[in-house]
Image (tube, rainbow, N blue to C red; front, top):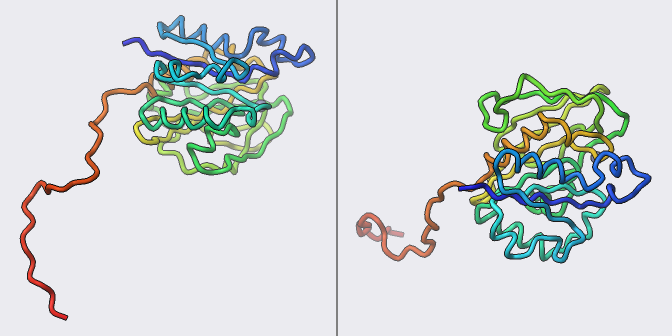
Length: 248
Ligand code: ZN
């Protein structure tokens, strides 16, 4: 089965000719991600905020195994109806990968139930992303760490529920640390948050970063599921023995 990925991008900074993102990603920062996933043999398509229904129609969502999400300046413009539909699909089993400033997206906060607030600074500083779970499929093929010469700093405390699995921890030149690769299970779905990806830097042209996204897509792809459990159980599996009435 070919994995079907929808790469969602807000796609606003890149259209501002005065913003560095317009030079780094002239057709949108989703393009290098889509191209990389396609080159790896996945069926990958882009969807963006300004398309009808933000590009996430019922048909698109029904045919998506894994959705990746990048947003920053226009989180509030994503309709609650779309957030409801994406949440329902994750609970049914669709994978969700939230990238960088997507930490403040409606869907990420909805799935986690916390503010997802964090510390941040734009100072062109070095980031070293350490692999802390060496056997995890999302770390497959990586070395001990990934170095990015210039990134935005995100620091703890990151207001999230403790991740079910923590794959990466970032160190920043200025001294902060951050849980930068976090996995959660929600319903039948798997979620992964991956920190790097500030729009003013060429992070999504970095092959190691793209490999992590590819690994995460494979990890989050729905596999076979247990059947939907019966919730109103009239017949017990074992015979329940009659009990003597308890004396007052
Ligand atoms: Zn940023």
